[in-house]
Length: 156
Image (tube, rainbow, N blue to C red; front, side, top):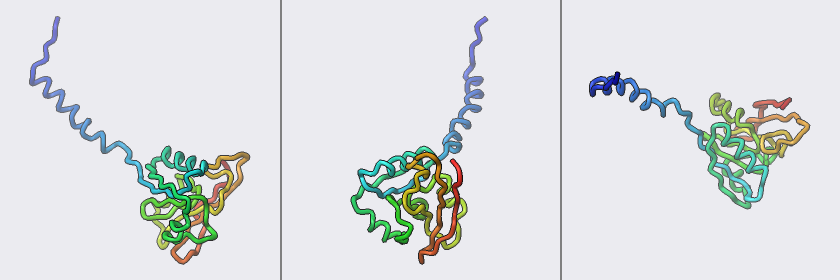
């Protein structure tokens, strides 16, 4: 027995599929753009960029041998300096801040905060990934350079 599909049956079935296909982009997660300013020869910065890209961000990298003007433009306090500076969602991200903390910053939008930072280059932060794990703290900062603890990482 051969079943032939009429045009009407075909259109009825198609009507159930098309709305799902049209809605598919709504369910796709859009990556958050992040601008990263780093030295072209810095391998740990490349690893941090890979970490961000793997965790819902779409990094655009700007290689520069002098990141200091970027830090000055975005009011990164000298004491919070690290090897790279990023800008995402209107906030500054200084150093190897985990993607989860950047997402938390974007979700919380804390009043007065212009960015988050991990001063220096903690060995256990994303992109450094050295063992054994060493605890580190992510700081938030305001335009006047005042800092507060944003997140603490005490284990891998």
